[in-house]
Length: 167
Ligand SMILES: Cc1cc2nc3c(=O)[nH]c(=O)nc-3n(C[C@H](O)[C@H](O)[C@H](O)COP(=O)(O)O)c2cc1C
Image (cartoon, rainbow, N blue to C red; front, top):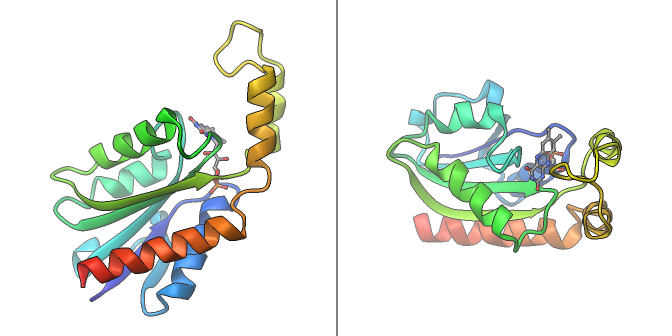
């Protein structure tokens, strides 16, 4: 089975997941979505993104649009908690970007938020979306240590289970 791991990562969190997947699946091809080979040549595609505005980030959306009909396993990082509705909705939005999509499984975990973005949110007026509140500051702090060793183990276990199901 030919497997592609294609990902996008602005600050390195999603790249860490992609590299953990590659360690577990060394025969897979690993590359950023911007340089991804023709997906037609693969039997299974792990597509990794960071959440941007409750969807996959823009580069990955362009890549997902090319994956119609292919078995795709989505993996992602986000600032919010992975068991939140926002996380589930972000994965669904990404899955819906694939025309005639065949998403076989999904994985998401927290990823540290770019300090520049936190600085920007700290300046927002109190009535703005994402304005700093006690619970948001706690969320940003909780994200700081992710992905951690447990996340990398979890994504590895997940990928091996996905592969076994598809084989
Ligand atoms: C422009 C921008 C938009 C973001 N939008 C969201 C969002 O809608 N929801 C969320 O939970 N995290 C959001 N984040 C946080 C990132 O998804 C998160 O930090 C992710 O782990 C970054 O991954 P990377 O290091 O692979 O780039 C955003 C970050 C940036 C820079």
